[in-house]
Image (cartoon, rainbow, N blue to C red; front, side, top):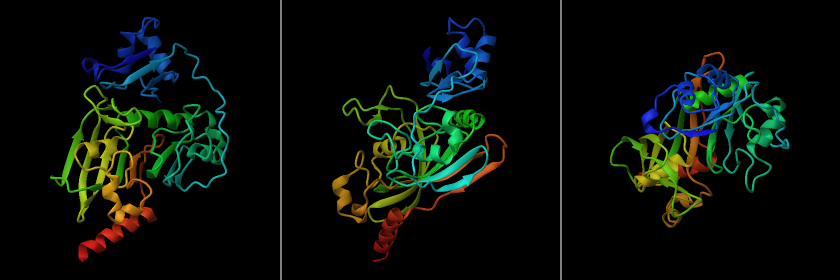
Length: 314
């Protein structure tokens, strides 16, 4: 069964939310068993705690099967590609993804994805999480570089998924944008959904899903600003859509940016958007210890900053 959370029921416990709406479930106790078995997902992520609070706009999917989630073969071919693993223990791994690498197989990308490489590197993750994206609890766009956490066990996957939903993982990005924001820091709080005029794009739309992006200015250049951006929610293309919505699109962005303006500047040499997942901070999903990993700007982005800095000095 599929349920969408209304604003009226935002903040309600997951088990109570389902028990009040799910006719096939005989009792709240049964709902709790189903949740514990891993048969309930919120926005595609497995949730195993009945006390999880639901949020407005979230989509809850539940299956009435208490024997536990089915284990199926991923059908994913292990890929012989290098992964830049910057942290690893028995439960999780953090990968510094290069631009140009797709996270998981999909339309037009059946192989040579990060998931193909991860299954080769850690065969045991084949049955962790979604069959077509084992271990993946959050994503980066193909042309966004930076840090991504992978779950290596089912326990880590369930807990990390809940942490994403509850905004317990701090995700920081470096973004170079056109122009100079009026305020040195701000929050973009605007719902995001599919663009009604361009079906392959996302946009700020009235009936979209609640979305919040925090930013502050790190440096200013003649025509650009370097921002540190923190995701509160994690919608598709969220940073790119929100920054474009406030009049400061990400430099080099071929979908939401200013391509003609880019060509006349140091950004013109970029083959992708200037967006890098630079830091991840969270409590370890199993041990509870603090994990904090940072990633420097890759060479192509650092070259742009170097050139813009030199131009400021002229």
